[in-house]
Length: 320
Length: 123
Image (cartoon, rainbow over all chains, first blue to last red; front, side, top):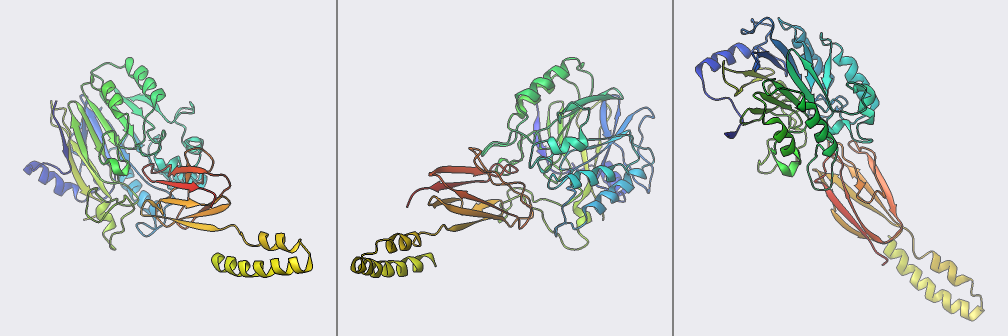
């Protein structure tokens, strides 16, 4: 089993060409499609056509970390940034089937923030926005406040699953079970639910897992990992194609473990520092100079070569 | 300010004792003794994802005021459930008066690697 961390795209002349086409794509969103069970990202841009994708292929968009309610120096207008992304999503040549939001919908778990987020997300021209909570959504009373606005299926849990276009989607809540000094965890109840949920899914069904905090340990000192993720990964190992979409760290990193590819996403609010930098000891919002914010709120595009499970990443900044 | 008050109170106390003994009015002493021990307030700053000071020793009756100076929200949540703040935005404060002796460890529930402890001891 090959495992490696990759923070940037491999060098490839075809990809460089694709990159230049995508440079005009100014939205911090990822457009995905599934063709033959293999996830690929479509080059979605208002200025050019999409790359090839079967007419019946499933296409969806990932956004993350909108932090509605944040109004400090790093981004005084997070609603504006979200609306910028929404305008781009609505301008896609082929509308996505739905949007997924990988958490930190709000900044302070306040009802007015959840309410505004829900209203603004309704401006996206899709039938459904599937959300999962981030730790900024569960500050005061767990998921209770979040669920009043974003209960996926009325079960009173922030975890769920659904099927679309032959792909099985799982939304996880890995921002509870915070204990002193440890990372967040999924918890035994949720893992038991996940095991039962996957029991009825065949190995050849493509799986997409949504979780706010990365399901691999990116940087433990900052809580960038999930304490019991190994149990979840063990449940996923038998499937031929698993894509894990995370948020939380406001930057793009990926890890591949066999058939499982994990990708974190950029934020639509503000950037966070990369861990391990000298002189930066905490994951606080980074303020960049004027005109630079668009460069650090970017998009993520995936392309998958026919017959390969490995996903290649192309990172495109919001603004050139 | 509390130390100065104690010193002046000690001098008045000695004077008061002499006076009370001389005059034979015992009720003066208890009133002066009561004025010698006011409750105190201690500040803890939350900055750069850390409590400062991270470890603190106070007497029973002390009130601690935490202030969040980060752009990111934090909480002050004790592990024994005896005190818990709401989510604290930038410049928000939380206060708790510690009445009983003990060791009270606490965390930020949003960032559980942020920890602090309050040792409450009679002094």
